[in-house]
Image (cartoon, rainbow, N blue to C red; front, side):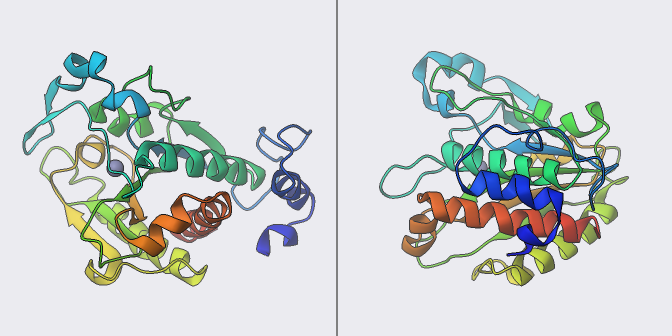
Length: 254
Ligand SMILES: [Zn+2]
């Protein structure tokens, strides 16, 4: 329970554990902490309303990402029981935000709701959000929809695309290695289907549009029974948040 070993900050985290959402130490960055002076851009992947037919036109908007032309965004995946990835990403990201702020970080989010009546933002806007808020690290939180036999987390990092990501590819790759190590050390199951739990790719707009070191986390496989059980429970989502915070701290060497 490392969250209780950080003094005053631990009080905020303890309050969170008890389900309290208000209190002096929650929300605002702690004056001092291992992440003070750090800005993190958090991107809860997708949006619940991306599956709402009334937003079909908005979701079909296209952009060129340096390698290929992509649509605005997608619905994301779901568990076999129908629990949407957008909701998992949102619930975990909110807890990650609270924990990172309690550790002293400034945290900025690419979306502020999870609603069937909202769509986007488009992935090109998500990708360029990190530089907009002058982030030290951009983390996009997702979950995978792979063959049901595989489980565990992995991270996507940008390949060096000339004029797009050649300035951040190396830094992102190093951050990815540290993130994976930190998240696994905290107890998160490593992906059984992505070697070394890192996928370097040139086709993901959220990565290609970034001008700051960027990672896209596939937290687990929503089509796998054991991952899905963890992803859909409150205690499991809290566990993911703890693991992700450990990964962020490792990536930033804080
Ligand atoms: Zn996703």
